[in-house]
Length: 145
Image (cartoon, rainbow, N blue to C red; front, side, top):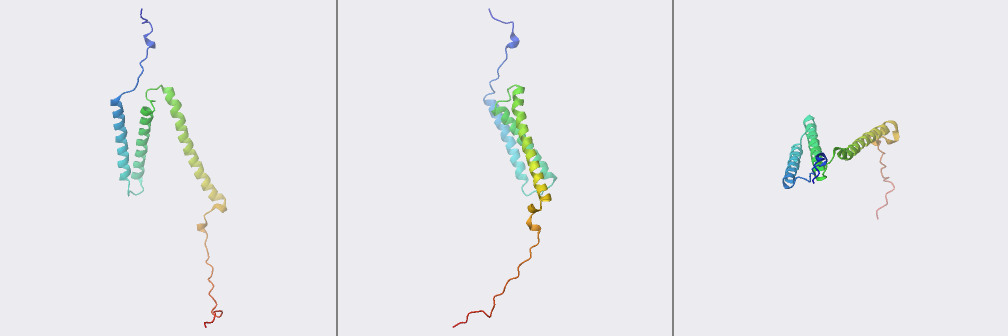
C-alpha cells in the first residue's frame, strides 16, 4: 500500500535549466557586456560633466546586474533558499562597505596630515632662490707654452 497521507512533504528538486537556460544566460551576459563597451567607448574624448558621470553610473549598474546574474546562475544560488543566499550576499556587501569606509578614512588622514603637520606639506610651494654662479678666475689660467 502506498503512503499518500503526506503529499506536502514531497518537494520538487530543480536540477537546473539545461541547454536553453545556459544559452539564454550567455546571451543576456553578452548583451550587457556589449552595452557596457559601447557606453565606455562613447565616453572617449568626452569632457567631465553630468553626462559623463551619468554614463559611468549606468555602467556600474550594468556591472552589478551582471554580477548578480553570474552569482545566481554560475554559483547556483538562484535555486537555493533565501537564508542561504543572504548568508552569502550580506557579508559580501559588508566587504564593499568596508572598502569604501577605508578609502574615505585614508583620504581624510591624508588631508589632515597635510593640514596639521608642516613636515608633510608639499615642497613645491616653497620658493627657491638660485645660488649665484661662481665665474672662474681668469688670472689663474695656466700659461700656454
